[in-house]
Length: 386
Image (tube, rainbow, N blue to C red; front, side):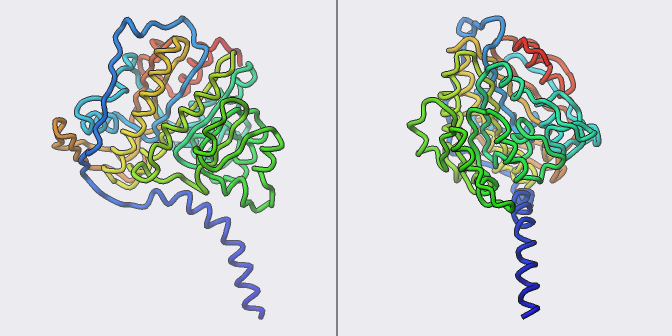
C-alpha cells in the first residue's frame, strides 16, 4: 500500500512537469529538406496611388513571424512562384536581436525587447534583467484608451504573446502567465492554451473569472462568429494549435475576428499577431514545415495590408524575434514552386532579422537598429508618453 501511495504522489508531481514538457516538444527533430507547393495563391499588388496614408497611425498591427529570417521569407517567395503579399511593403530594415544575457536570444527575451523596448535575459517575460516588470506597448495602448488584442498560432501563453501581457521571471510559468491576463483589460485574445486557464494546479478556473469580467469566452472560432464587439477570448486548443496543414485557416480567421472587434473602438487599437510555427519548422530542420507556415503567415500579412490600405490610418509592421535554423536555400525552382534547403542548426541564430512596414510612419523602420527600437518607434508614432 505504501508503494502505491508513493506512486500516486509521484504521478501527481509529474503532471505539471509533463504539461511543461509538452509545450516544448515542437523542438523534436523531423528533418525534411524539400517542399513542393501545391496550393499557389494570388497576390494583390498595390499601386503608389492606392497607398496614401495619414501622417500618424491610429492603429498598429504588429505581425511577428517567430524565427523568420531572410531565407524563410525567400523560401516563401520561391514556393509561391515569386510573389508574396509581403512584397508590397517597401520600407525595409533589419533589427539586431541579441539579448542582455546571450548573443543568441530566445523568444521570451526577443519578444520582451519588441514589446517593452528593453533588452533582458533569455527566458524573461515582460521583466528587465533584475526581474522588475516593464510596461508593454499593449499596456501603454490600454492606458491611452486604445483597444488591444493578441492572436497566436501557438498557445496564447507561449513566450512571444506572453511577453506583451505578462510579467514573469521565466517563460515556462504558463499558469502564472495565464493568470496575468486577468490583470489587464485586453479586449481580444485568440490562441491555444486553454488548459492553463482551466486545468490548473491552484484549482482556479480562469475562464469563469474572465466571464465575470464580461469576456465572451469560446473554445473555437466558429462559436465566436456572431461576436461583433465587446471583450472576447477564444482558446482554440488545449495547448498549442496544430500545424498549418491541419489547422486550416485558423490564423487568418482569428486575425479577421480580432480586427472586426477591435475596429469598433473609436480611439484605435494595437494588435499583435504571431505566426508562431515558422520557428518550429526551423527547430525540426523541416523545410516543408517552415515554408508552409511562412505561406500561411503571408496570407495574414495580406489581410493586414488590405485593411491598412482601405483604412489609411493603420501602420502594419512585420518582423521576427530571431532567426531559427540557419537556413541555406539550395537549388530551388521558382517557376515550379519547389524549395530545397539545408540547416546549420536546430536552434536559433544571432543574425539580424528583417523588418517590413507599410502605412503611416512606415519609413521610420528603415535602416539597421536594435530590436528595442521597434518599441520606441511605435511609441513615438502613436504619440504616447512612457
